[in-house]
Image (tube, rainbow, N blue to C red; front, side, top):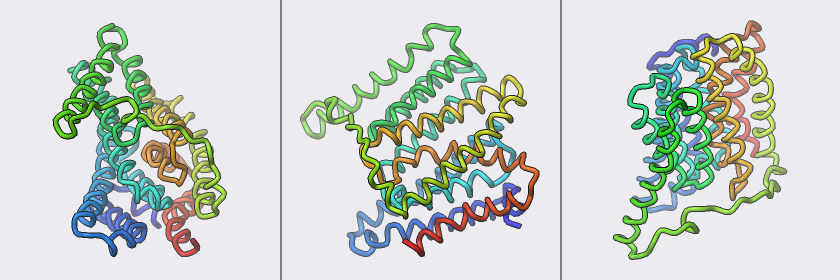
Length: 307
């Protein structure tokens, strides 16, 4: 059974996940790869490597902070969610922003050790800020930074000011870079993106089916995830709830996103993979778990054949 195969964290599991992403990435970007010059092709190869790196980073974050058991579920789930939306694999800005947000999440979860707190808050905020340079609305993940401060290190007032210093530092560096390269100031209009509340694209069956499946899975697994949080230790509760907050912020980003083509859901895949992994770990119905797991893995291929 597939669930048994991915219930362990072994090198072969991650090789399979990497190949799985490679196959769907090539299908999503085949026209670009065949009609572009060498530089563009190298960029696409770089984006593929970043996607694979994101999987390894997600696995590291999850294992290091005990968000899930030591298995490959979250890796293959993240890959499955990603491959359902070809637009997510075609949007380089979203891929880069997602990597930087994972780096930020790694630092936020480490707040609980209460060592080098100022440095970790600065780093986490800086990564969120860098992500926002590629995809502006990812700046909303600053709420996750402040939640981490609140539950772990909120007793010191200076910790609340560190994110402001980090953002100002980033903007100063970007402005200096712009002045050196283009001899112009980096302005607010260069940074921000307008919101778009037109969901017309979601009427398209190829986008509606995976989106509906994803949100149904979210509603189902989140109910059980909340039960898991209630039973967790006090220290683990904060980290598990932080993942739930990440999912909520990611959905808010998707609602505010300037383009609605499925790529705006990219930031939702990692927290959802952790939530669903916890559901799989505590599910007793083996056959239902197997059917659900196989559906997630095969749905991208089915969508590719049909649409």
